[in-house]
Structure formats: C-alpha cells, structure tokens
Amino acid sequence: MKKTWKKGLALVAAASMMFGLAAPASADEGEELKKVTVILDYVPNTNHTGMYVALEKGYYEEEGLDVEIIEPTDGATATLVAQQKGTFGVSYQEDVTIALTAEDPLPIKAIATIIQHNTSGFVSLADSGIESPADFEGKTYAGWGGPGESAVLEACMTQADKDFSKLNMVISDGSGFEALGKSCDLMWFFEAWDSVMAEMNGVELNYMACRDLDERLDYYTPIIIASNAVLEEDPEMVSAFLRATEKGYADTIADPDASAEILSKYAPNYDLEMLKISQEYLADKFMEDTDVWGMMKDEVWDNYSAFLQEYGVIDEAIPAAECYTNEFLAQ
View 1 (cartoon, helix red, strand yellow):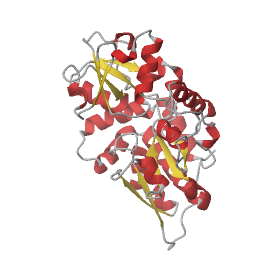
View 2 (view 1 turned 90 degrees about the horizontal axis):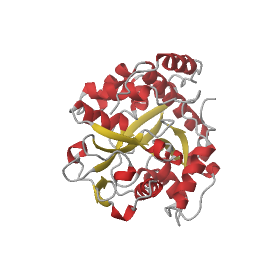
View 3 (view 1 turned 30 degrees about the vertical axis):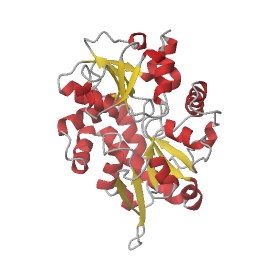
C-alpha cells in the first residue's frame, strides 16, 4: 500500500487562518452551561479528534455548552438521536438515507460532514493476488453486515462482469487485519485507521478505494446528525456546537500531532504513534475540496441515494434536501 501520510502544509495553514476568522459568541460569565450529549458511531478514534480538541480547549464552554461525548451502548446512533437520547450523533450517509426511507422514517437530519470524501475501501493481503473486484469470485469477505454493504460489493463485482453470488460473505470476528489470509480474504477498511494499524504491524495490503470503484461511492462518512426536534427547538445551540466543533477541527488540521495527544487522553488504549500517523493522514481530508468545514453537497447525497435504490437497498431515492442541511455551519 502506498504511504500517504505527507501533509499538505499550505492547506493546513489556509484552513487554520480561515477558521480563525470565525469568532465565537462566548457565554456570559455566571451563565449556566447548556448540557449537550454527543453519541459517537463507535469507540473514540481520529475521525472524532476535533470534538475532543474542542472539549479539551474549552471551545464548547466558550459557546455556553457543557458537552459530553459518549459511545453508543444500547442501539444504533441514528435511532438514539431520533429518540433524543443524545443531542447530536456521529453517523454515516448510508444510515441516514436508509433511516429516512424506512417504513417508519426517523426524524433526523445530517448537519455536517466530518470528512469530505470517502476514505474507505476493500483490502486484501498484498500477496493474495486479489487486486480488484474482478478477483472477488470464490473468495471470503468478512464484514459487519450493514444493509448497504452487500450492495456495494454487488455493484463493484457486477461492473467487473463477475458473479456476486460467488462471493462468500461472513460476519467479522473483530480481529481486523489479523483475519486476512486466515478466516477471510477480503475486508472493508478505513484507510486512516485499519490500514494504519496493518502497516504498523508489517502487514502489506492491496487497497481498493471505494471512491475509485464507483464515483457514487464517494459519499459522506462519518457525519454529524441531530433530531428534527433539536434543530427546530434550539437552532442557536446547534450553531454554537458546530462553531466550537469547527474550531476543534481547525486545530486538528493545523497540528495533528498535538491533537492526537489530546485524543490519547480520551482513548488511552491506542498506541500514540498510531494515532499521530492516522491524524496526519486525516489532516488533509477534513477539508479536502472545500473552504468550509462540514459543508455538504446535493450531488453527493443524490448520487448515493440513487445507488442504494438501484441495488434495492431503498425503494425510492430521497431528495438531498430531506437528508441534510448546511444552515448551521459558519459560512
């Protein structure tokens, strides 16, 4: 796998300067902070660092917010946010689209994307001979069983004129890269996390980026969501939360090493060097091809919605405007 850790210093500097222009409205002295809960999509990792930086540096307090960041424990994040068991949540475009097109739609909406492009893809061992979806027939894929997962695999194999029914799909045992070449041949990795772990352990991979296999797979993952009720009842709080979060990601872009050290306080079980490598890779990704952190586009939502409809994951495509809003971002 080609190393991609080199940081675009010009982009980082520009992003830091741009964010510096947005001055937060500080909470009045003595004013009680408003409690806010953020439910993550998984365990704390380098996708989330900007929020931990904002927490550590007091950016949320400056906005009058008392923020608690927690892991999901009793259900999917989208469902928990819809039930208002958390103020905000970290989710994925796939989950939001499926939730909004379900028979009983969830009252949620995406309010910011954390990363501008999909940084995930399929992996196999470098010496496996599996270099593209054309090589997937007869192989075993270990995944998490998400509703859109098989659709992506089917699409990629179909476009390569291969038979998706000849791919053996199993649920991952959680062992990550260690399972490759043993209980499975293929997995779906996030390049900034799983691939970094594999490389640091001397495991060479073939990496097949989703966004290169089908342009419609360049969707937003992860994203920040909120319930419609929160957006309607307290829009000023939502804007305040995103202002502080934006500052946290600006600092993460400007100094990924220091930001990784902050994350390490909240995720002490991870190797600090791994966190730094991962954070340096992501520093260029948080604002790739945009001047505004968190900004989303209709075409990205529409393309992926059409993809999910084509492969039978959803019955009807849903307009992008019903899925997300940029109105709470600093523009």
